[in-house]
Amino acid sequence: MKSLEQLWCFLAEELGTLCGVDASRDTVYVSRRCEKEGDAFLRITLPAFSKAFDTALEEGRVSSGLFVGFQRRGGLPLFLRGFLRNIFTPDGRMLDIPCVESIRAVRQLAALCGKIQGDCTLVRDRKAVEEYVKADDGCAQWDALSSPALLKELESVSRLALGWVLSPADYAVSQDRLEPKHGPGATADGLRGNAKFDMDYWPDHLDSRFPWDEWAIANPRFSEDGPNRQIPFRPAKMSLVPKTMSKPRVIVEEPTAVQYMQQGLLRVMTESIESQTTQVGFSDQGQNREMARWSSRSRRLATLDLSEASDRVTLQQARSSFSALPNLLEALLATRSDRVRLPNGLVRPVHKFASMGSATCFPVEACVFWVAILMAIRRHHRKEVSSFELTFRFLKSLEGKVRVYGDDILVPVRYLSEVYELFEELGWKINAGKSFSKSHFRESCGGDYWRGHDVTPVRVKDTIPSNFRQPEKVHSLVEFRNQLYLAGYWKTAGMIDNHLRALLNGVFPIANTEVNGLVRESCCFTGFTRATDTLHRHLTKAWVLNSPLPVNSASEHGSLIKCLTLHSLEGDHLHRSGRPLVVYKKLRWVPIGSTDGTWYGSKDML
Image 1 (cartoon, rainbow, N blue to C red):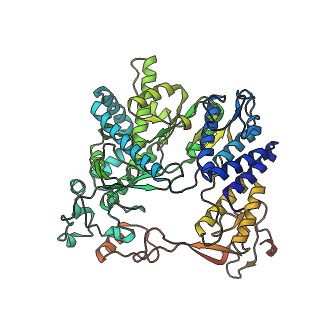
Image 2 (cartoon, rainbow, N blue to C red):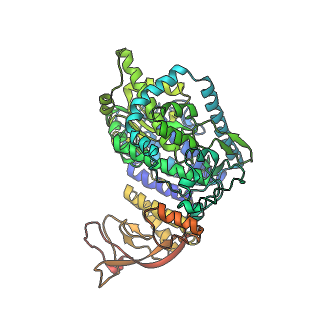
Image 3 (cartoon, rainbow, N blue to C red):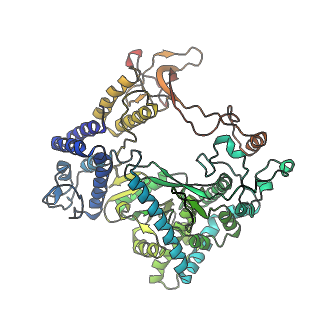
């Protein structure tokens, strides 16, 4: 196996066997398209086919506008027709009892290569920047034309909802009980690792609420130095990060000092909310997935996904939503960057509350979305009872029925029309291709379900490595192989095993997921080659990837701040920090075993 095309064809043959379908024509078709279009067919065209298929599941039929670019006969495309005929009638209507395995197979084959990271063309990069600017201009227009009545309604509902879940955070901010820290990402001023603790730039808008001499120095002895006021203003910096071949991810890098305080607000906000309610989450996607699985059977909850979610929450919407929390709102505004430098060097004002990359973007957008959902629910009930008012008891009754995790939203279907109407009033866009409410299909936080069955595809995250001098790609392929094995695609996993053995010089042992090394997972055996006399545990020899932290030091004052503000410090942290720049491979003995302590296998199982 040397290419994504070969991987796709082998997997198609195995899925065809599982579903009783002849996939030979599909493999020939894919080979012909890849010869003409390259990997773009697998990484751009087929993911679009997957989205069209999800739309067909939602609508219960294959409409004429779906599967553009694929030849059709009758109501179905010729590509993957054998699988599709187990799901739809020849004229495109869904069968009364569609084949779940065929649904899983179509989604697996179409979405296999959709998440491979890679650089986009300059045209696609330029389009992503233009979409960011257009969305931001839309925020400015919305704020200028916003209805006072709508903002008052937003304030009214947020006073009850956010006043309940964020009151501990508001109190913590008022008492200056924040624990700021530096995030792992890049910053607008280019500081990395330990160097972030030497903050010579402290902008005025941040100093107005968080004085430099209280938050950026270890003790008053260093207060005479002060921030370097001669440094010109530093706006946030837009950066295009590889996401998929079709579209990059637009990230805005914040100045180091701003990011430092944002991280403190992020922590206090998330802890406050998650201790009060399960309707808004930040750390556990499992609840979203479980609710989506349940609603794929009951059809009582709709799963919604927003397009450009972080880029469409306006500054005025955030102000109105947090108006009942004056201390927290003041801190959020003080840590907000109001200007951004585009890739072409142009500096422009920011009209949205925050861009992706700000530590406060995720919690603020989740809170605003939750308040909007509650507004829609109140509107629904006021159509039935004009005097209806939201109460604390009613909010508690929504536990398990409403869930917001960033822009992944679950809401009862009965409120859906009011939610759509209100979101449109607020200038937000619901991604119709990833929002489901009519059929038995649901998707949320990476979990896809049909009538309670998991139909989530296993996606390859990188191209196929040709040698072991690409350790990150080898590690990604090992993870993909193990996921395929657990999904039941054993033949394809075995084919990948043969390729990996050649890359790993024959050292690719069977072990369980607890092993810190490149191993193949098996539900049947655990192999070992020797046992330790002192620790009474079994070992196997496997390749281990080592990612040493880069050498990076701070000044004496910066090192002192780090030791005083961080709770867990390990190793040579004052001399090495930041994200690893290189990855090395090393062959070593690693412990293996099953989770219940039972040992299986022999030394011949390498």
